[in-house]
Length: 252
Ligand SMILES: [Zn+2]
Image (cartoon, rainbow, N blue to C red):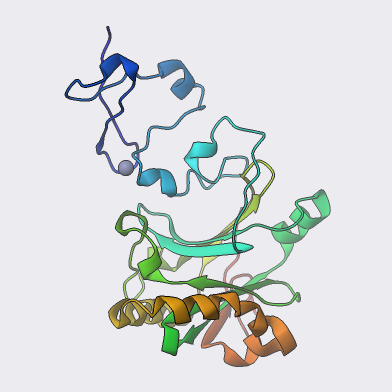
């Protein structure tokens, strides 16, 4: 029997796997499915890193456990999620639109993106807001504590160039693949304010679970009567800055 040890491609931890051939044996090993790996149909990740984004590329599945699967339907509680990920991914806003028809994709691909955030201090909630062009704001909650230790990072308050990089990725819920990737830099001032809010959130600690949950369920209320606009702590366009001049452009 050929025995291969292998490691998680993200964090390098030795991946252990048990199957019928190695039951009750130690160390736990498995024969590596070389062929499938070479064809890009499987990814070697530990149970934790499987929760991280796979590859920020158009056409790639947004999580590695969807590799090689076409007939899958992604069901999410929100129509978008934001996290500051480790392993060089950084700021990532994943948007799950109701339609990924060519017209919608071209819209997401082309329109300037504006990012903002607001803080609901009483429940220690950061709300990330975004919009394409002149469309209405959309919002998604962010709580650093809600992510597993291995799936969250902390940008520095001074925000280096790299930490200002922001990715917006459109995920097709039919199949779970990235259909649009936009990458650019947050304006320095915005990044600093945003990073400080994250630091503040971390030090404030876990909010009351029930109150937090109630607030999350009522997030949609922010979208009524344009309330987001007046509540934003900071905003910055990634396509154009707030004065309408070209600040940075998200390249594909
Ligand atoms: Zn790992």
